[in-house]
Image (cartoon, rainbow, N blue to C red):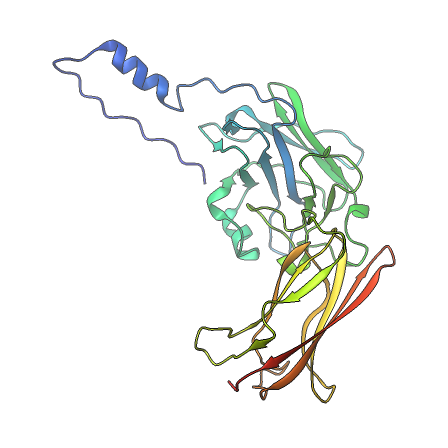
Length: 316
């Protein structure tokens, strides 16, 4: 939420100097005239235009500069499916800073966004009751400063993953800040493994610096006995690009599937999958040898299978 800086309490008495008062007022964020924002300094990072039932839209912006940006200098407009910008609306009427390389999330109802995406950074939410309504599937968003366009995005259903049939609650995330907003492939579906949206924090879709997919067990043994040490199996992964889907299952030494961890999930480019040692029916499983089978596939026809054996060292 935007917080208005409190005015200073200044006592005028012996030794009072008008020049000191002037200096103090000039140092206040409310008194400094905001600098003009140039194209490329404030960028669209993410948009949720088709929220979950009962949800609300949001637009995430990113300060791609080395100075603090005051959102009083910025207005925002929605774009029709025909590409026409609607009336722009001011984002803030009081000091609303975004620190260098920081994020801000514009939404009409921060509480609902937090409810639908519990991992979101609510401290970065900026309540904007008059946030424009965005078309669900085809439309756009434009950012203005001083009457000039500083960034714009036009989105279509083709930007969403072809593996996702229901786009409600799935945002479109920017892949690279160094690449033009409208560059093909720069906005894609947020990972369903990350909840479908990441308001207020770095997109897990940002490409990892690897040449091929890799899945690694943090340890080849784990003991879910509640002692605080290796209580969960951890599978860490990094992928070369976004758009990979995964099925992840656990089998016992008899070849029987005991737990499905992921089913047709759109993956982030990096992350961790955990298992608590319980079955699909929430039953305790015996200690022994198990196998994690990871099937990875992509719309481009890529398919890989990883098999990772491990040991559950103790009963629950």
